[in-house]
Each structure stands twice: as structure tokens, then as C-alpha cells.
Length: 256
Image (spheres, rainbow, N blue to C red):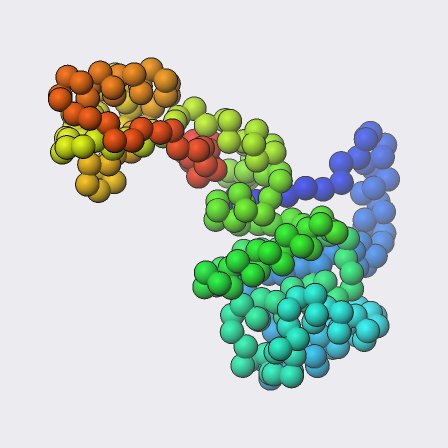
């Protein structure tokens, strides 16, 4: 599981002690500053959207004026007169997000917020989270690397309870020791033959005459691939280095 986290870091041990006591002493005040959307979004399906959000607002002591504001902000206006049970998964996620934001928290915690959404709903929820992130601290817990790259600035990878990385996205991608090279030839070529090329640690077919090569030194490997092509009377239609992705970094840091 990858978790994208941030938090308050005390400047001294004395400050840490005071901060810890304050959290215990004023637990309700601390909770009032947090909004939470769990993976399995618990909603009252028999309640209407507006009715449910008024109920949630009341539990936080928020004004009912916030209900209309949240409905508009989360794009629920066309569905506000429907019962929650009549909504699609995407709109139910919006209701959950509106409920998490109804009391204007400083921190928003999201646990797998896009699970089960279709591609259109996925884009809409991502955009909504990005918009919220401009005003609040958003903590996102997910194992979907594409979500991390789309939504996050800073990443913490936790493996077996231990933090193995805590960096900005760009820095984290540079941790990957392997490079991916995409090459396409004009004629058929054997994957096994490519695996024997100097610097190639792995090779797999992508269909047709297109291959994915794994290497630690892309420049030397590209040169060796050119020599391989000449030796085998092949022409290279395309050769490029694929941009690094978080999936390879995650695997590198958590395997074993």
C-alpha cells in the first residue's frame, strides 16, 4: 500500500511534548479540523442528497448555508433532489466528499477515493480533489500509482510498517536504478536475441516488431542495440527512453 502523507512536525522535543498533550486534551477540536472520506463511503441511501448533507452539517454544528455551497462546489446541483441510493458511484463519492468538507476542515484525508469509478467519473473526481488541494492539505492513501502521479506533490512509501521513501514526485522518480527503452525494428526479431545484447537486463515483446528493454545504462544500451541492428541487417524505426514511473520505483523499494 502506498500512502501519500504529510503532517505537523514539531521543531523541538519540548514542542513535540506540548503538541502531543494538546492533541489528547483537545481531541474534539483536533477532529473538527479533519475531514475524512473512507474507501467504503458510508451513506444513508434512503436520504435525499440535500437532506443528508444538512444532517452531517448539524452534527458538526455547521450552518445550513454550507450545504448549498458544498453542493455547488462538488458538482451535485443536478442530483441534489435525488435519494443517495439513486446516484451513480461517482456522484456518491461526491456526496461523501461534500460531507467531509461541510465543516471546512484544514486537513482532508482520502482513502482510495477513486476505487470503482469509470474513466469519466475518474477524471471528474481527480479534478475535484485537485481543486480542493489548492485550499487545503490533502492526505491521499492509495496503491494506484497513476493516482499518485496525477494528484500528489509529495510521496511517502511505507513498506511493512517502515517508511522507505519520503520525497517529492520528481526526486522519487530519480531513485529508479533501471531505465526502460522502447525499440521498434522494420523486420521480425527474437526477444531471446535482444536479451543477449550488452546492457539489456530484460526484454519483452510489445507486439509486432516493437520491444521493451530494461537497462541500467540507457546510453550504452542504445548504442549496443544499434550495433545489434546493423549486425542482423535490421533498420530501427524508433528507439526512445520511456519516462520513469512510480510503479518501478515502488517495486524497487518494496520487493524483498
